[in-house]
Amino acid sequence: AFASEQSESKGFVEDAEGSVLFRTGYLTRDYKGTKPGTDTSSFAQTAIVKLDSGFTKGTVGFGAGIIGDASFKLGENGHTGNGMIPTHPQNNADGTKDAYDHWTRGGAYVKARVSNTTATYGTQVLDLPVLASNTARLVPEYFTGVLVESNEIENLNLVAGKFTENQYSNQINSDGNELDRAVVWGAKYKFNDQLNSSYYGVDVKDKLQRHYVNANYSYTLANDSTLTHDFSGYHTEFEAGSSSNIETLTEDKQNSIWAISSTYSKDVHNVMLAYQQNTGSLGYDYGNNADGAQSIYLPNSYLSDFIGKDEKSLGLQYNYSFKNQGLPGLNWTTAFVYGWDIDVVGKEQEGQEREFFNQVKYTVQSGFAKDTSLRLRHSYYRANDSYKSIYMNDTNEWRIWLDIPVKLF
Image (cartoon, rainbow, N blue to C red; front, side, top):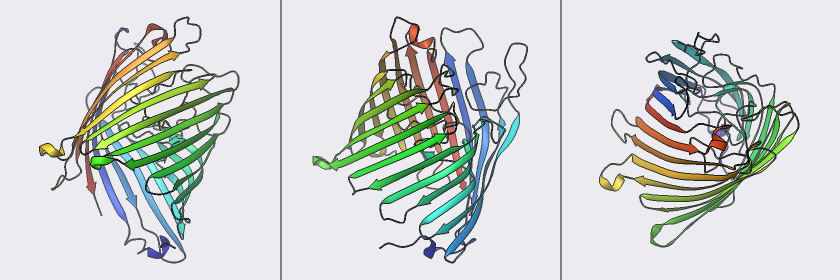
């Protein structure tokens, strides 16, 4: 037996938490070999607020909360289009759209808890492999609906929910992505300290059905090193009328994508080798059908996700911590991924792509600025002519984030 979360509740006010994340974000994409004006660049400031009550005491506990963001652009932002900043609907004479000068988004939620089971209804940021909110932009993607999470059985986490609104990071409308209905369910089980597994599913009405599986096994080697093996994969059935990255489907289609990786960790070093492969009648697709703009929990996912039809990809990632050099909190990640054998409809030449990724992040470890972080990320992406014609032009991308978290109470 283990403790009930509700029995340990201290009260609606006593367990309340409030925080503000001040974020300055810059994202720019330099598309090579394209006409002027197609590059994108955004620079903005936001304050992301979360006020979360505790639960009232008793057999059934009740609570409430608010999440949202208030933002303003920095500079002209004349080359938007990268999912960072909302734009006015009307086009300028040159076909571009003006960015909003300032904007606010968000909503409220209520929650109830019995024993170790919690139901939340309202505006939420989701972290589920089949319905994941995009948090890689200035502000998060929001879903509105109900989610039930249960931990009644030790080491077993169960979730189920239904969502009826979806708001991208660059949308003002709380249902800007026009979600009709998404039903989600899943389970995650920890067998022991070494072995974990999970399964999740989602049914987006008139769009798709998707299933995700994962197994993760980790064990200790000599010299205090660790080896971790991970398998993950999706199977998706797309319905006619839904959208993929390159087309609106006129008939039902399906995709299966899976990946296997091995990660070796020792002290400040971490090395991962990953192989990823697609099969089916089209490539993997996410986000276009209100199924979460970050719903790709696979290892070969950076600027490109290596998700083309029949694509195979091999990735090598290395992470280094500078803590032994007297710089705790400073980390460097570099990776190279090569994708090949992409079936490009209408092209005799198979598609190929590659990406060289680097990221440096520093997080303040103590003092008044504790947990403040600065992250610099760069991707060098190139594809052959066959694949870039349908996916993405050769691109150099920079992302720079300065995050300053402030705890209110």
